[in-house]
Image (cartoon, rainbow, N blue to C red; front, side):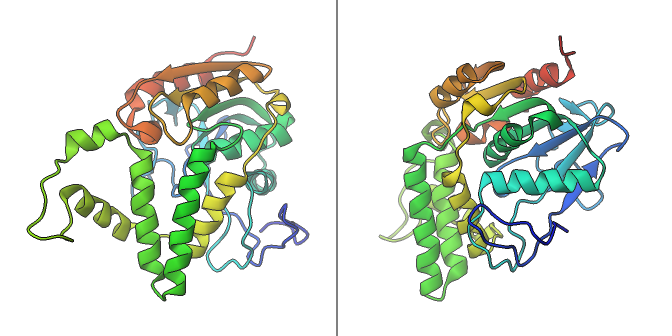
Length: 306
């Protein structure tokens, strides 16, 4: 449970003031927090109930090696049924800091965050520099790009439109379909799909059928989708406040977090390093390019501080 006086940056109190964690590996090992996009949760590595969302990175012998570190995953606020609507990346960082105190983790060896998780990692580093040794950020910058905000704004309006029509699930599905297009590159879509039409106007093309299936399989409440999507666009961190040694990774094909924004951020922090790579997978490269990013992450988190 979060403290009863915990308030969001908006001034709101949470109706469900709790944050859920999962610890992977030996809790006596140095602790690393790992966080991903808004669909990711506390199950980072494989566990008894299933596969982790970052299982290619977080595993025994992996880039984040569970024989050397314990890895803490957490579920982003808000919790199911929450009435508070406006949550910032800073709110997530403050809630996480409180939860880490409760499990007696006074200082993290590293915070490895990707996409929205990278924004939360930046917010944590800015607010709690004394509690963090290393910061590793993938596919995220100090503030959102206006073009990405425009696309997410359309997604949120689609969700709200679906709710007004009494079809909230369809609204989320359509928003997710649009989001999927922004996560990947045109080159990947060209490789995977052709433009062969259906028998009649209105029949889905192959690529559309794929997106419909992915959207319909997406399980997120519309209220949570709107809150977390909006939280991305509220994100803002002053690079001057990042004093922790930091590594920033960017895919040159990422249309949501452009590499030039991340390169600028890396150059603006006190002790920042930058790694850039090409990828067919755009913003989703942090999920798909373990062979490329894994060795870079591993070297950074395992090397001794001077």
